[in-house]
Image 1: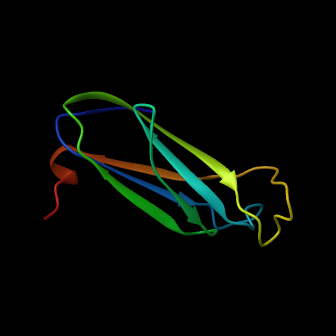
Image 2: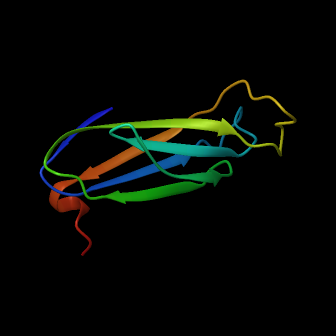
Image 3: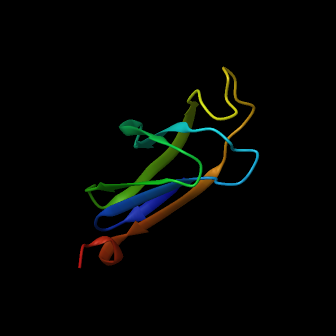
Length: 94
């Protein structure tokens, strides 16, 4: 996803808590091609990352790696979740 900002960016990813996602994932958030602290999430859990980036357009990407447990006994057939991005003045802590 392309994001244009003149200030900070807050990136929040929430792993789907509904079937078929019945196992954890390792959420990998990339900003401009750089990995930002991978985090293990169980179904329904969220991770939020603050990124101070120079003004302009930036690329945000989310990938997932399966984490064994739950219904994942060594293979995952898919994953999903919600990505929410807040920019500019809305991303400044109040």
